[in-house]
Image (cartoon, rainbow, N blue to C red):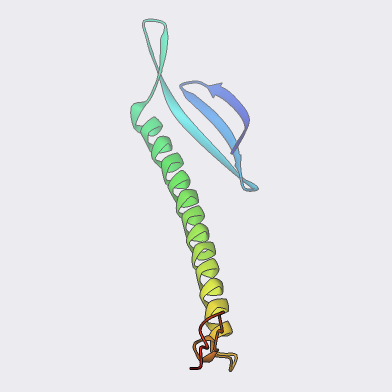
Length: 105
């Protein structure tokens, strides 16, 4: 998100924001009380909610990508493990001779 321009006009405060190639214009009403400027809480909370939702969508997308990578790795490891067992070569039938194991009396 890139803030392109901010300006004030009468009792409104405008923001021109660039998000993923799309330009949005947001505005907030200003209240002048005792020479102090305050943002309207309703509009400010709405922009916070929108920003929070965008962050949540991005975080969920990142989580989904991580889960897909995780399961891809697990499936490839198990596929490699079972592929070696199905090569018509059974390790259990192999006779391992050790010294002293073939004592013929």
